[in-house]
Image (cartoon, rainbow, N blue to C red; front, side, top):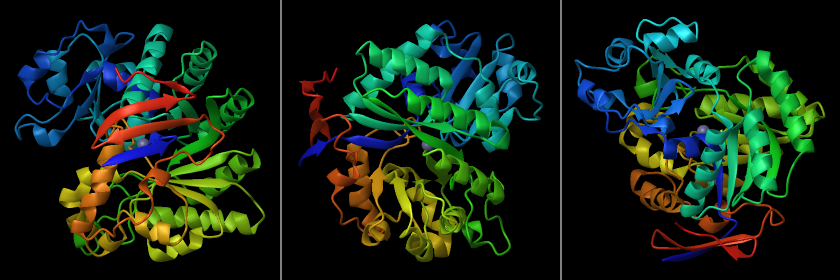
Amino acid sequence: MLFRIPRLYDSHTHFLATGEFASGLRLEEINSRQALQNIARTNPGYYRRHWLLGFGWDERKWPADEQPHKNLLDEVFPDIPVFFARMDGHSCWLNSLALQEMNLTSETGILTEKDHLRAWDQLPGFTKEQERTHILQACRTFNKAGFTHVRDMSCTESLWNMLCEVADAGDLTLAIEENFTSHDMNDFEAMLNLAKYARQNERPLLRAKGIKVFYDGSLGSETALLSKPYNGIRGGNQGRVLWDIADIENIMKQTWAAGLEFSVHAIGDEASHHIVQTARKISAQGAVGRLNMEHAQVLRPETIQMMKPLHVRCHLQPCHWLSDRVWLQDKLKELYPYAFPWEALRAAQIPISFGCDSPVEPSSFWRNKIALDESPNFRIRKFTGDLTVAHAHPDKSFADSYTIIEDGVVKEINFNGRPLSLE
Ligand SMILES: [Zn+2]
């Protein structure tokens, strides 16, 4: 089957992490003390300054009597700080030296959610040279997968400035949209100012969109906020939120008042409901702005109805279904009919965009197509919309391009009138 897709768009990515991930230390196959010892610790690509970084561990691949713990890292890496991010990007595994340098304490060395994100933000930056290498590597990684447009959820001041340099040198082979993450009220104002500054300094291939926040966690770690307990256990865990909803209301208003978009990571049905309710509330007070729902993996029908009068777009990653399918029905029980609601959103005429959440999942148009093809066999309503539209950047004036993909293979990619290398 052959697809010709205009402006092939990955609408939810972590841009720099994608470049970093492609050139950095991968932990998927590392699942023993011996494997830790075999890591090529002299590879400069594995470091941020003197910190050793790795991505992709999964405790389920480790033996029961040798689970990820700071002691294990201390034995193998007694003399360098180590920061290993879990495959879902929601936890990290640190050794004692790393905890010490960050002034943190932890019994196990495993930090999750907010603690993980805060630790991540405390990591030393890359050198300028490393950052430039990662930007170019990320462009290559997305281009090789056929993408010409990406939306980045994790911009920083140094990334923005470096992207401007790369754009001005004519080396950008992607059209990029940037969002700045705020973790709490303490950093919000600085992030808003940064987004405003970036908005004033856009380039033809580089746009500043707004603010991104994490409202809940993930289904995999049972931290996404559901309206019913996980696994049908009466009185059991329903997940949690990372923000006070009154603070969300406040910063959504401020972001919209600045003419910027407000994007919210919301995975559980109850988390999404809170956000949509809040947007409705401030809209009724006269606030106007764009809301992006990130992931929206479980949406109740009434929440979708409430989206209708809003300027809202849902950013879905069908490929997450490929990873979640094994436990999804068990975890969600009676909420399962509301999972991966691409068809319900289409039917309600709520705009949607597809993406891959790279580097959590590889950036791939074809994996999303496979997920959409296979999920109806698992009682997910079949998507009857046009996949090439849901995967195209909606703005025709933002860099002209097309991509040809045949049976999963990228055959041709044309960006601003010139063919791009697929090497
Ligand atoms: Zn993400």
